[in-house]
Figure (cartoon, rainbow, N blue to C red):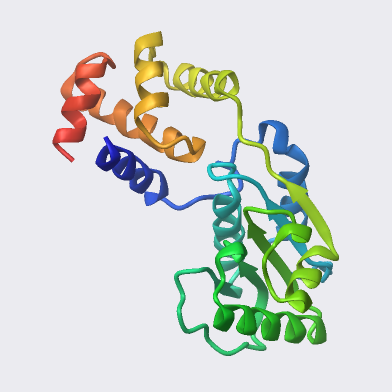
Amino acid sequence: MQRMKQIALDIGLATGPTLASFFAGPNEAVLRHLELWVGDKSGTSPRSPVPTYLWGVGASGKTHLLKAVQAALREQGATVGWLDASIAEPPEFNEGWAAILMDDVHLYTAEQQHAAFNWFVNAQSHQLWVLGAGALPPSDLKLREDLRTRLGWGHVFELQVLSEPERRAVLRKAADARGVFLGDDVMDFMLTRFSRDLGSLMELLDLIDGYALQTKRGITIPLIKSMMENI
């Protein structure tokens, strides 16, 4: 079961998260905030250097949004600084960065916290935006105080996980848009056996739809199981 969840997560990240593919639900305010900041594709409009911090439980979309912002800025020809808990030796600050993105800050080691603080100080000196994300609100982060306070002094948004009815509604709407039928049993299977992340579920729906067309079969649980065996 865990392997199937991991496969589904990998599928969900295969084409890369985008702001357009983020299903906001109760998180409309943060999506609009990020869209406004990324905004002008020419990169000529002034952008606020006030930092933004997102927090929420797993599967609420924090990493999706950070990677989506990173992708959007890259499309504009910009480079960004990226730091997450998997980067054991963070690089030096680069004045050429257009923004700094820090994911899973609650997991940072002492060395990562040192780098993050250094990046933050330089970002403020160069009027660069910092977008951070973690599992806890700034006041509860077990980080060095100078980093914790900087993460919390700007815009702070709590991300909410979509409820199961909301996820079902989004999947149903997406299936209808593709002209395919998802039975309640198939919906149950997708929601209980795979990643809760809605972006991953939507990519999974794309894959299932393509496999159903290829095999000329309706979308059923046996079809999904067959598809997973043939990935």
